[in-house]
Amino acid sequence: MKIIVCIKQVPDIAREVEGTIDLLNIASIINPLDMYAIEEALRIRQKFGGEIIVISMGPIQAKNGIREAISMGADKGILISDTNFNDADTLATARTIAAAIKRIGKFDLILCGKQAIDGETAQVPPQIAELLDIPVVTFVRRIEEINNKYAKVERIIEVGIEEVKVFLPTLLTVVKEINEPRLPTLKGILRAKQTEIPVWGLALLNLSADEVGIKGSATQVIRTATVKQKREGNIFHSATDESIELITSICNNSS
Image 1 (cartoon, rainbow, N blue to C red):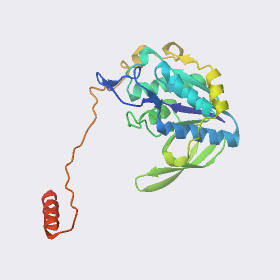
Image 2 (cartoon, one colour):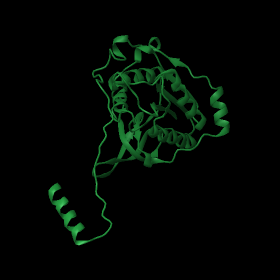
Image 3 (cartoon, rainbow, N blue to C red):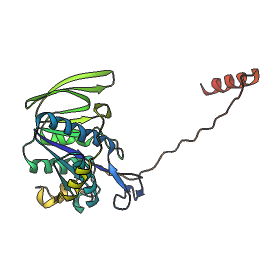
C-alpha cells in the first residue's frame, strides 16, 4: 500500500511580520496533529506492507520535520519549496500540494492531521482531495478496516460518531484520539540523517506562477493578532452572609 502523509512545519512561537508568520527566523515543529497521521501510516504499513512518503510545503528548514518523520519510520520524504509559493492561502497551498502528489503518481491513501495549529482552518486537506478528484473523510478517530479497495472508518461529528465506508484512493484527516505517536528510534534518527530529501520547486509541478503563492491565492491575510482576555475576579475565603449576598448580587448583575 502506498501512503502519502502531508505534514506541515508550524512555528513554535508565532511572530507577526507584516501580517504573516516569519517562518525563516523562528523555531518550528511538526504540526502536532500531523504526528498522528504519521503514526497511523506506520501502523497501516505494519499490517499490509508498502511505502510511506512524507511531503511538506515550506522553507528549506522544513526538511527537519521530514527527517523527524523518517526517524519515526517513514520511508522517504519530499519538500515542496520555492519562493513562488510564499504567502499562499489554503487554496494555493492545496493546489501546489495536489500538483506534487500528481507528480508522485499512483497512491492508495493520503493521511493528514485534521488541521494546523497556526491557522486552524482545516481547509487544505479537503481542497487537496477535491483537486485530485478523490473522496475525503474528515475527523477520523478510528480506522476499523482497510484493504486495497476500501476503508471503514469512524469519524467525529457534532452529534456523535459516524461510520463511513470509502473507496480507495482516498484522503483521511485524523484526530488525536486515533493513536499515540511513537518516539523516533536511534536507528531511525541515523537513517534520517543519511536520507536525501529532494526539493521540488515550481518548475517540476506543471503549474504557473499565477497559480501559486500570493498570486494564486483567493484570499490574503491583512493582519494577525493574539487575542488576550482579561477578567477580574473576587476570592471569598468563607461563606458568610455578607459574602453570599455579594456573590448573589454579582450573579444577578451578570445575567
